[in-house]
Image 1 (cartoon, rainbow over the protein chains, first blue to last red):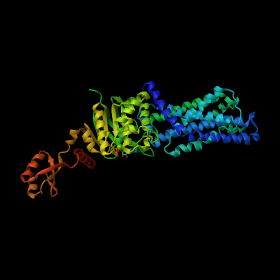
Image 2: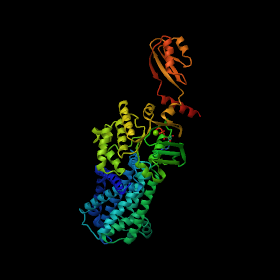
Image 3: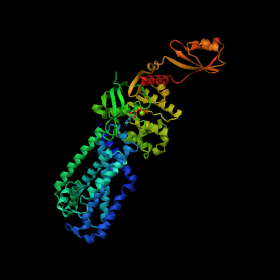
Length: 258
Length: 315
Ligand SMILES: Nc1ncnc2c1ncn2[C@@H]1O[C@H](COP(=O)(O)OP(=O)(O)OP(=O)(O)O)[C@@H](O)[C@H]1O
Ligand SMILES: [Mg+2]
């Protein structure tokens, strides 16, 4: 297909997904807002004063970037995993795309964009909600924007891989519960890894979520556990790996075509 | 001579079973050519491998071995290009039940890179032609089974494919609508669309197709023009309704036609191999019996189909 055709196909996939996301907005938008309000209440209003400062800032300020990141990651991931899985499992509508000349990379780009849009929108909403509880700290807006994108792209890609692989609905519930949630919670949304014993500091550095949160927090608060350049390098490499993996899966049809 | 619409050479497919070991051998070396402009029927009992063959051509199933070309384009070299030529109506319903009829067709055009401004009038035209225009803003969930099939046909045609592949499009469609669908398919075939059809209604295949292939257990057992295929049938059973009661004398005179008395005024005879029907009628007439109506036992193609698949299963 010529470039224009590819763009049309891409936009068709994205448009369809956005229509779905907004149609079922109570399922897509509300849960993260409710969760973050609860966390802000607990860590800001109820416990904040007892916890005191962390790395020299009030605890709630420290938690805000983590909560925004949590919302972005969960929403991007679930969006793509579920929307891809249901199109291949429940009604086999993925075949509409598979019989068409739309190449794998456009399918990837289309589904990932749906997840990125949802992740970023909800991330922004959580950020907005946080303003009720604490004023915004800002150090570097470009870094914040870059991490909004990186996190939503990485988690959309991971969700896509999960959606392609999953053979049953369990397959897309297991990974978020047993892999993602621990990675995210242990990645430092509630604490700085400097507060951990040495061994756990090292373990944390194998957790990609750590780099996302650490860099993102730098954008707001201006300090980080590891240098920003290291986080960016790790995350760009991870993105490249996931793109390659998703492309390989779709190209060969593993988990999609018999 | 233009390129054939489809060339399949030594196509094999072995499905992989749960544990990753080789499972069902669905195609065992199929070779077949469909010329551009043909109306081709692919027939075969359940599980013969028809859907598997279509799946490989349309990109939903991975082949194990063999070559496939669509209008000269090898699917191993450029499947995306080959897919631009094809429109497919799958055997199983695969429409999003929450989507509106109109959106389903317009979105499909999108996947072929057709802008909405062009897809919208084309969608309206197709929905009109297939009798779905009144339902265009309804969710596909609310359509009847036959309407869903027609929606899938509209969706398959939205990018004006040269080659339309239909996997049992008339399953569950009532007689009247089925006839309407036949007319429509014949019309677009006359206008140049090559058609590959699978069906279990052999009458349908007999009426519509120019060429036929019969598959059984993953291999082609007969392949040719409708006339070639029908010529496999050396004799054909015919029923005669008589104005009077059949006599033993009259039956005796029909010896050679293997006559059978069905009831006092109905007999069956076998015609073919030099024995025509007019001689039989003359013979009955000589015995004072008028023939009122003549009917075939079943469609000719159906008889050939049953005969060939039975022979192949026995082999
Ligand atoms: N996804 C699959 N995994 C494993 N085996 C399969 C799969 N799909 C089909 N088969 C097997 O391959 C063989 C051919 O099936 P296919 O669907 O191609 O038959 P068909 O000719 O279309 O039959 P029908 O007329 O019933 O639609 C059957 O034995 C079937 O069980
Ligand atoms: Mg079939």
